[in-house]
Picture 1: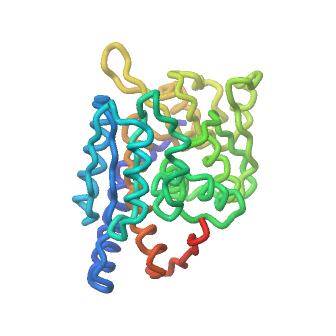
Picture 2: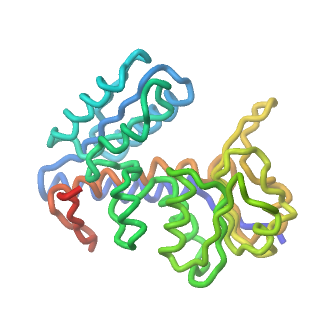
Length: 298
């Protein structure tokens, strides 16, 4: 057996195309152009690349991107003041603060200061809570993107055993909630889990977001399983690899994401989709059969 690759680049391009159509419809019908404020603090090289990619994707799809490039000396109070101004700016539909932030800034405080209906990262406790009670509004971009990748395989969700390796607030935990919402039976492994191998071996869907290169061995993968690798690392030779031993896992799985070209492009695509959704939600509009969600109390 050799697993079929789940082409994140292709699926992300399709989603960006649909976003561009929705943006044009919003402009033509309501004269409204979705606006995304992207805040970056300091000059972390990886963050600079991510932000450039996000701004480029906004330009491609017609979303208005507003840049806030702040010095590393920016204080938490200064950042909170900027976010408050953006919260009250009707031309801004989404607010994104690129991580990591300087040590002097508490990222959870920052996340909670962003209005829930402008939280296009999907990190606000209100939005995580909506997902937990099966009424999702703005959804965490990476887990949401993973669900689109899984849907593309045509494999069923109901009743399948799904394992999430990693329990971070921004990826692992909302990933588990997404899979539960889809009808999977969920397990979550983390740094205190005993015998990770046995959990992996029994799982039909394995989503790995532990941030540890090669953590999941290919021989652990259940024959016919679907493997989603969210991790990304650069080896000494410059090659990009994930949290899963890809070459061996590919020989056992039915479907697998490559690194790079799997989950990464989807995160940006879902950010764009969330920005359009936020514009619609805030204005009470509907499109393409989507129902509106009232976040006015958040």
